[in-house]
Image (cartoon, rainbow, N blue to C red; front, side, top):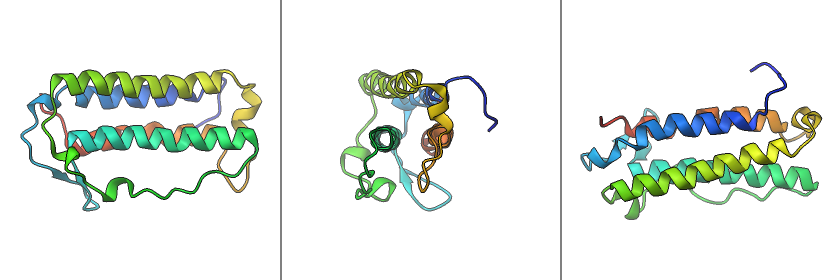
Length: 152
C-alpha cells in the first residue's frame, strides 16, 4: 500500500464493513461448518470471533508500542479451535450484536490513529511493524467472513 495522509485506521473500518456484508446473510446459514483452503473450520460465530479477536490483538499491540512496553505474547489458539458455541445457529440478534461489536472495535482503531500525529503511523518500531503496516495488515479481516460465505 502506498503511504498517504489518510488515517490508516480507516482501512480497518472498511474491512469490517466488507465483512458485515457477509454477516447479514448468515441467519440463512445451513448449519454446516465450512473448511478453508488451509483446513481450518469456520462457522458464522467463529468468523465473528476471529475478526474481533484479530482487531483486539493488534489494538493491544498498537497500545503497547505507543506506551513503549513489550507487546503481550499471543497465547490463544485463534482459528485452530472451534468451540461448541461456534456451532450454534446464527440469528438476526447475532447479526445486530456482530454489527455493534465489530463496528465499535473498528471505530476504536480509527479514532486511536486519528489521535496520533501522522508521523507516528510510519515511525520505525523495529522489530515490530509500523502502525501503518498493522492497519494495512487488517485490510483482510473480511477473509474470515469469506470462509463462511454469502447466504443471500
